[in-house]
Image (cartoon, rainbow, N blue to C red; front, side):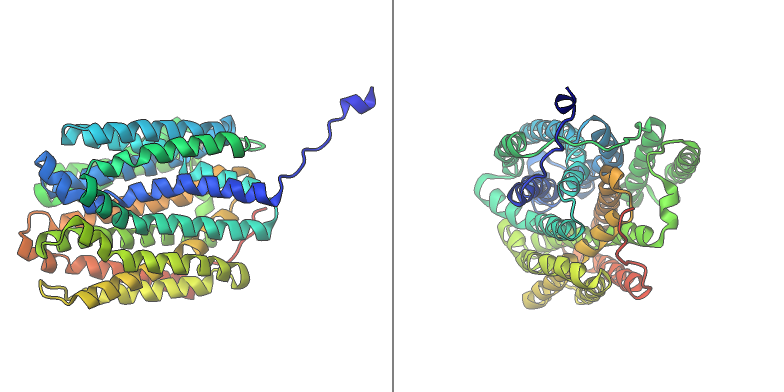
Length: 466
């Protein structure tokens, strides 16, 4: 009787299965990353097709990123409680159906709404997939390598979006950037069902719905003000009311989180310098990337008259830099710690932005491509040290929330970057885009300098989860 009552411990998955789980999750993460940037290169075509201007087009990108950013935390917590594979599969289904709605959208309003629903689905993929990977890799060194691969794939997906989008739009029109998601979602659903095991946190937290609502309101208001501010005026009554509402929502969010027994975001974590700097660094990296991508699209297509395919191809140096340097960065993190690759990320990003601070209508293409290469290298070096530092700084039992915090910072950075870049050039003629973009390239350089400060301060060091 005793022998029948004792269950044998589960057999650890083989190395092949563990890395297969990583590959499956990385495929889905690639989909989320590509969809964050693939639409950028198609914005002028979408504008022509739906009859809208630059400011309306900003919402096509930011409806996705804002919803994604605001729901990542609660999706991670729900996955820890209800099962990561279950939430992951739900996310794939929602993402696929929303992609179908985007492809069929007859108007800007429908497209923006469908993009928001896409963000809901994506929020169930990003932190959950990272939690699945962390759970499947019990060995610390193997986990560090897996996170390096993860960061590489995510970086590649962000950089590859414009190239992929340009090719699809040239061949099939702008709606193809959404149609392409459908077969990928189907393949991912099959692979998840076959290879990905179910997992939950040993002690999952309850969803913090008041905190979630306040976070969503605060993020939407911030991005909305950044997008609409140039049109309504930064000192207009509407803008002033927006500032007041942001202050109220942010203050209420902090108070709710401090009083909650199981907060959406444990604000005490930000007293840990490695974690806080990793989150701020991730935000800065994605501000720089998205400012670069949107300014690239608007400048090359409107000012230089390039096609979407040529515009997407211009980002190939950026994609190449990210692709080559992200795995190298992961290796450096595993051997030497995060500081050195973060120094490289900051240096390359700073120089890349400075190359374009005097951009004009006749700037040489070699200089433009060189700047994109430098920014791509910086992006490639940045993700692994920041991701590893953030995840290692939190308990393993909260892996879903750990991934969600870092991903939230990234998507907030992406939304802010799009809003700022769009605000700089909205309302300017084709000839004025180059000059109007100068503050944007200075912002890219400032983000690189911020990474250098973080690295030189010695804060981003490897912290093992307790």
